[in-house]
Image (cartoon, rainbow, N blue to C red):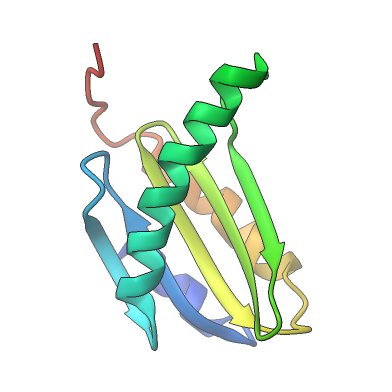
Amino acid sequence: MKIDVLNNIPGVIATALVGPDGLPIESNGDGGEVLAAELASLRTSLDRMGRRLGAGEVTRLAFTSDRIEVVALAVGDFMMGAALARSSDTRAAQQALAKLAQEVDSLPRVDRS
């Protein structure tokens, strides 16, 4: 599995890789399926926000809640991310996601026209 490397990062609770159809290709951990569903939903919102603001494609997202830190990347037609325990250092997850982005970017693209 492509995202297994994220599971070895301290603080990681869940990981997910979502395909262009919004369905999880891979998900791991407690809440992995939920993370996948929310990443798919976020992808739609990010695409709309980028268009409406004239900002172009949004490719990176990070946010903090009361309990978790989430880092995510949009790579072509795919979305992938990791949820970490609150106050975890997210740098290792961000670096691992950036490396995975190169692999994911080589996956087949979907024509959205």
